[in-house]
Image (cartoon, rainbow, N blue to C red; front, side):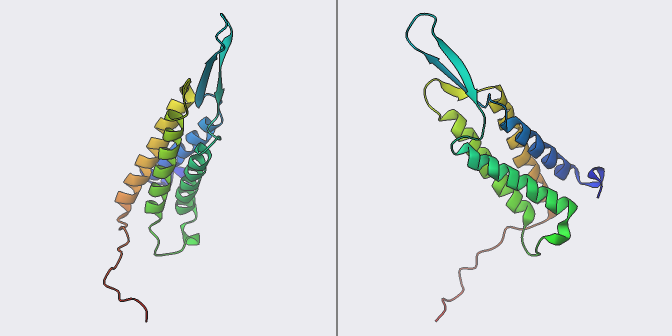
Amino acid sequence: MDFKALGKFEQGALVAGGVSLILSFFDRYLRISFDTGISGIGGTFGSNAWTSYATLGMLLIVAATAVVAVKAFAATSLPDGVPWNLVAFATATLGTILIVLRAITAGDGVGPGWSGYLLFLSTIALSVMTFLSFRASGEKVPEIKKDTPPAA
């Protein structure tokens, strides 16, 4: 299958997922500043997005991108009856939340760096594209039937 033959939401999701993966390796996801208290001695360094629970967030982003790619290029290999666009949306959104939370709750003197802000944008774009793909697909959220009697 040709990339241009895909829908615009699938294309956007694949690009956003790829950009997110690349940005995750830059060491400016977190910007860490410190001061020793001695005049002129201190510094700033960074960390990539593969630390702490942002690692789980990145794994979810990679998984969501993989679901979109498999659905786009090898849909017959996926089981029927599963709302795969919803799965991609849920994993992308949870991954985005974890990545943002890690950066803004890291502690004093620690905050998002330039690649962190760009990573926020790209993972949000992935979540939006997977949501729009879910809406366009006509898939439904599975119903939970509460009227089923318990097994005897």
